Image 1 (cartoon, protein in one colour):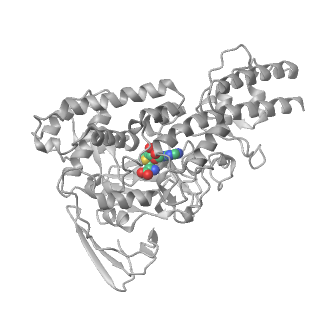
Image 2 (cartoon, rainbow, N blue to C red):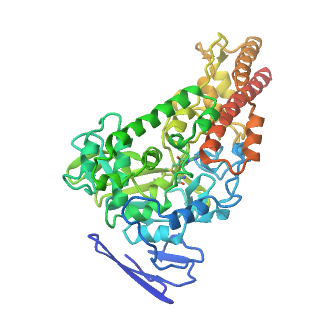
Image 3 (tube, protein in one colour):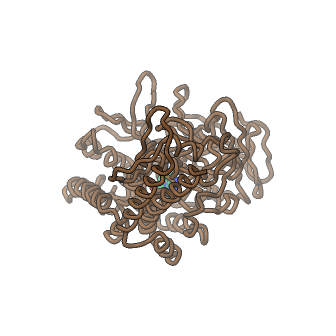
Length: 527
Ligand SMILES: C[S@@+](CC[C@H](N)C(=O)[O-])C[C@H]1O[C@@H](n2cnc3c(N)ncnc32)[C@H](O)[C@@H]1O
């Protein structure tokens, strides 16, 4: 419960719907810290609580120009969207269970303290509805919003809760029929239910989630009417559903481009089928144009979480939007994970047990374990140059000795969970990153009991594999340097265009890293 709190000028008291939350929020106009149970909840730097003078959406699901504009400009803060630092992956980050990695989301070098804090309104609207965040803060970084440690988090034996989001704030639909909604906001007989009901249970989760989201924006006093101000707008979302044909060409990956074209056509077809002129206004106003619907589908694709929850005696596999938790960016070496707390129906974000997180470090979760960049791009519109699951299509007969390669780079673990053995590597090897782990998985290798590698044969194999890598690079019409130059010299590029160019750049950086790793391998097996 709330303990002692500082009171200077203003007192705000909020009584929350059925949670009957009686919370005295005492705020000084200049207060910097808000203490609850001695935990620093939020650092509201120079916080000034503004009146809730915002004009709420008229319920028609349209963008609210003022707030959206504010959000647009604040999501893109001058200078922060650094484009030149995608190579900075070798920069050591603070010690974690994976000391050699910087999170993909933190590849760009801006320290968290330089990133703009989210508007106080963002905290307040959740806080009064029982959302809690402990020792973390939301900032606008190079990849949009992200969550950052507001203080050092010491390693503990048990996972630690850093966010609690009550079920009432989430939007969820069961993954299978009969469709169940938690909270149950869609009234029986509403035509949006029939539209949801017409979807294919196996494949159309994103269309259902888009309908639910649009409905929530239109639903009187729904929290998502407020939260929508902090969602990326059409221009800010990296989803390739929102990419132009020219953006798709920049991927230099025809398979991915054509997948995205059909995904977009599928969403369009759904909108045309259900948003025709004979539909009642209460449906039409949810997405007056196809672009609005495609934006909602892209929100579903980039922000939804697949999760098993338990409500009463019901165990439900659900597709859900979890506000605040959806601001966590992705990393293949995440420091956080999600958990459902049945007792009081809370969705929790927890830090890994034993994980040290330094103040300012980004908090991340793993969106998709074991997936290549093309899958991350397809769903989320971003890629990583050090994705440990990327794959190269080697087709020749050359193979290198697996154990020798692993030991040269001090890689331990089984194929599925390779990691840099920092103890053996004497504190760390800044060359070894996710791309080297991917190389260990994707390079053709041989292994026969205790038979050791013969250096001269290995070197021949290394040369052949490097040759194949160079052929892969040669198939691109641009080099990595040229891609980097394009990114650096076009600061006003759209987010989708930037994501597309980064995707092909990341592919090349990966291939180049494999070539370098093979160079190092051949040097080290000789000596
Ligand atoms: C669930 S949202 C995370 C919050 C988001 N950054 C925002 O501003 O609202 C997922 C989106 O964040 C961005 N993102 C997440 N992780 C990323 C990463 N590792 N690198 C680049 N972009 C990332 C992508 O645009 C992705 O579609």
